[in-house]
Image: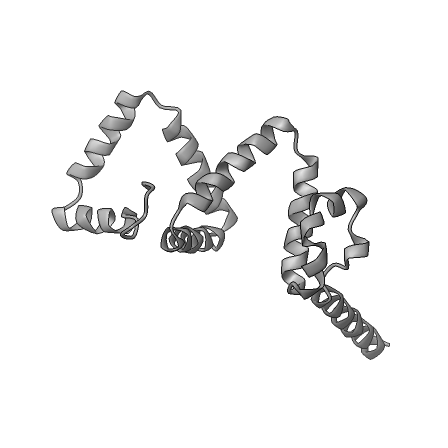
Length: 157
């Protein structure tokens, strides 16, 4: 009996993996998603399955946004497109590091950032000065080098 359950479980996992590998058929998109993605209809079948899934998910998210959320998303996307390929890669790498942190560490990092960002500017400046005073010149230079956008990038980190 246990063997049958294991075999059934493996079969279900394989079927789920196969379904995920098939992506999303154009016909399976909602009419609203199809309208939003209409310019991709002719090439939809040529996209990698995981790309189809990400685009379909993005379209769903877009359709759920209100006007202000869409405006903000467009602004963020515009800023993203203005970045050099090297800077985008650097951001992706840093996000992977963040994503791989334990959930508690990610939460603590977000909370610290939020607390810092709502402080009065004089207090933030004081904290920055204390941080600089506690570091050697070599440590500070290493941090500056890590923040520097690659040559040719028009935007600051």
